Amino acid sequence: MIDLDRIRKISGLIGYSEVIEQVLEMMGQIAPVDISVLITGESGTGKEIVARAIHKLSRRSSQSLVIVNCGAIPAGIIESELFGYKKGAFTGAGEDRKGYFEEANRGTIFLDEIGEMPYETQVKLLRVLETGEFMRVGDAQTRRSDVRVIAASNKNLFEESNKGNFRKDLYYRLRTVTIDIPALRFRLEDVDDLVDRFSLQFSRTNDLPYRGFTSDAIKVLKQYDWPGNVRELKNFIESILILERGNKISSDMVIKHLTPQIGRPSPNLPVVIDKSSEQAERELILQQLLFLRQDMRDIKSLLTGSEIDVSRSIAYLPSELAIPGIKLESIDGEDTKAIMSSAIGDVSMKDLEREIIRRTLKKFNNSRRKTAEILGMSERSLYRKINNYGLEKKKKSKK
Ligand SMILES: Nc1ncnc2c1ncn2[C@@H]1O[C@H](COP(=O)(O)OP(=O)(O)OP(=O)(O)O)[C@@H](O)[C@H]1O
Ligand SMILES: [Mg+2]
Image (cartoon, rainbow, N blue to C red):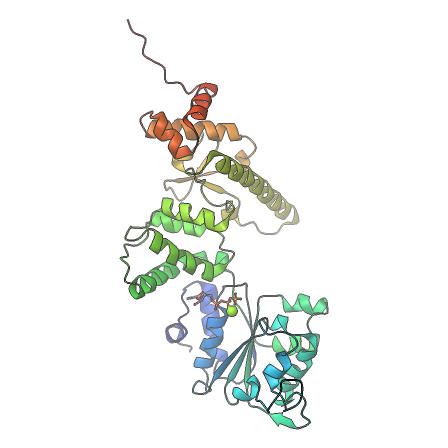
């Protein structure tokens, strides 16, 4: 039996979703066995954490772990970096030098972004993997190194090999043991734990007061698709804790800080209203386009019979933004309501604007100055819009 909690603790990997438990279990199975491992997953999913943990959980843990980012080393010198060189092999090679494979002898080498490794270097890597043998650049002597290789890639190496960018033989050799880490949007149930742990860690190390997140705030976090995965979530948590110092984090705060970060409205996020009207207008238009695209996708998957992810086909709006006549769906019987995708097409920018103005006026007891300020428009254009939309409050006729 594999002790998942032990692996969780040693690795620092947070998450109780089924997919993360599978990753933990696989780590427990393969770490003690001396085989090469390929870790795949989008950027920010935790490939490096997993690689480090495999080394820590292995029998090589007391030896070194050498981390090489293949994407960051210029193609011209990657071979001499990996395998070393002999004095005089090229200009500047003033003395013999060991490469990473020798440095990592008896330990582990983590080849990050292996998809970026030049094609010619890949042959040499394959040779080390198969025989443990290599040569320093400019040297004729064959050397051996006892190294466990862990490789990672956020590219699809199978596709890369079909395109001729990655050697097929190396791909087949590497993929025997593959750990694929799913994107965060496929394991949103882990968001609660990730938020908890990142918040506690960050507030503790920086001596910040921390009062938690409201459940609505967490709900909003789960509606976003996190293209930058756990790294993006972690950065987001850290910045919101600084910007909202000492406050309990509400859904409004999350929406406010998330929207500028993504630079585009996420189709799953509520509309933010405290923006300049042009900006808000642009975002609403974009959002409508995104809805349309999503509908298209859903229709397509209906036609092809593939599964639809319902949570992604609905656009969420906080209930105060509900628009009369537009079909709404209550989510988990909560305060948040959604405009059903089927209603898209019935709602116009004017409807939205009219409703936002009406409600903002109401909220601020009909103060036009405050409403104009909140909606980021001049009082003059607010007056015009109030007239156009017939939002004039009827004066009681004097007797
Ligand atoms: N499940 C997780 N639990 C705790 N922290 C995580 C988890 N997944 C990722 N992280 C954190 O998120 C950040 C990104 O993780 P990591 O560097 O391992 O991602 P990566 O897959 O290597 O990304 P890239 O492809 O961009 O290099 C790190 O700070 C890491 O500690
Ligand atoms: Mg990485």
